[in-house]
Image (cartoon, rainbow, N blue to C red):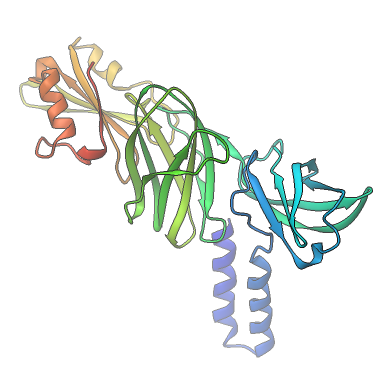
Length: 317
């Protein structure tokens, strides 16, 4: 919707050049009004420590209550005459980055107000599709997710951001320094794998360069739950390969397990690999000539017909 509005105003701006200058000024005013004016903090997610600076705060930093989206912030302190520090509260009901009211009160009276950008930590399931595409750009350049990891190698894959270069980071405790996972300097998709320990893991997607864009995030540590599936067979080789593609949902009931059940083959391994369209799991079968060792080799090493081998994960069953 945001891109449609901006495109419409830009079109009007160009068209108005054929009319009088007042029309052009009106179009430019419309474009200006579409530009967000809320303050974007360094972090902005619930539980994060943030600082807010404004010269209007001089003389207004003691004995204060800070409210964000109507929720009282904690750990409020003054770090300078015009700067306060606080811990971002959790604001219920917000599932996407958005501007919220920011007020400072002294003795119950509002002495300063503006809007700031709140960034929720969105709970995200692994190994299964999610239809939510999140918007990101150079101004509001961070999105946050929360997953439950296991003691395993996880592959992370963003895609759909054709004109934007995004990077992926993770951290395991609030306010910890994000650790890079993927910084490949490419547009359209970003991916890599990393070994994680069991527990809560926070994932940060960051806009590095390019235009604003929507993107989808996929994470897996095993075979994916598929939105679509397809067999790859050769003449005389019924049990060759079958591909489960995560996609964005809904999940299919005709996945590889179902399609291959009629043949009752022995699955010898699975390879989950990333790409420009997200995660896919390739299923190997012993009756098709794929031993577990051979399947693993084709999954993780170039030359075996796979792709993005360095970022793929192998599951030996």
